[in-house]
Image (cartoon, rainbow, N blue to C red):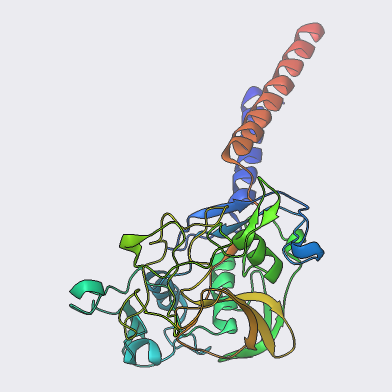
Length: 345
C-alpha cells in the first residue's frame, strides 16, 4: 500500500467515524441545554423501583418551548396531517403559537407579546414559555423529528398514524443507539427530578427540598420556588390568564441534576404508557406543584407539555482520541510497509 493510499484509507475511516457520530443528530434548528443523569444503578425511591435507572442518559434542563415547537411545525406541518397544531394555541391567551395560510402551505410563528399583561404590567412574551396543548402523540413525533427529521420513524415506529393516533412501538431506552431522542420514561423523569446522587437520597420536590415550595415570581426566587396556582393561598406567580413563566426562570430552584420546572409549570408526558393512557409527571401551574398521574394519550390541555431526553453521547474527547487512534494506526501501517520495502531492496 502506498503512502497516499494509506492516508486515503485513514481519511475514509475518519469520515466513517464522523458519520456514525452524527447520523442520529440531523441538522434541525433546535438545540437543548442538557443535564447528564448518571449514578447508574441507583436504588428506587422508598425501597421500591420508582426512579431506578441502570444506564446513563441526558434530559433537557427545561421544557420544550413555543419557539422550539414552531421550528418543528414549520419543518413538518405545512399540511398538518397529524394534528400537531391545536387551534387553542392561537386562540387563547395561554397558547403561544399562531398558524397562517391554508392546508398545504401552513406557516407557524410565535405569538406576539401580550403588551402589559405580564407580572407588574410587564409584557408577556411567548417565545420562551413552555409549549402547551400537547398530546402524547405530538410529543413522540417531535422526538422522532429530532432523531430522523421525520415524524413517523426515528426512535418510535408509528404505523396507521393520524391526528393524535397510531400504533406506536416504544423502545427499550437502555438499548438505543447513542444520540437518539425520546420522551423520558417515568423512572427517568422521576430520577432527574428528585434523586440526589451525591447523598443517594430522593427529595420530595424537584427543587432539592422536602419542604413544599413557595410560588414566588422568578424575580423573588427563594431557592425553593415553583410556578403553581395554589387555590388555598394567594397566587403570586402572575395573572391566571397569563400564568406561565419562561422556562428555566427559577435559576436558584433547580433539581440536584440541574433541571428546571419539573414541578409546577406544565404536566409533562413520559413514554411509560398503557393501551390508551400514559404517565404524566410534575403537577402544573394550575393548582399544585407536585404530582404523578395518568392521562388519555390524545388529550391536549393548557396544562400539558413535555421535555425530551437523549441516549448517552460519547464525550468530545472520546471522538478526538478515536480519530487520533485511526491516524496512529494508519501511520504504523505505513511505517511497516516502508520497512518491508527496505528489506526487499
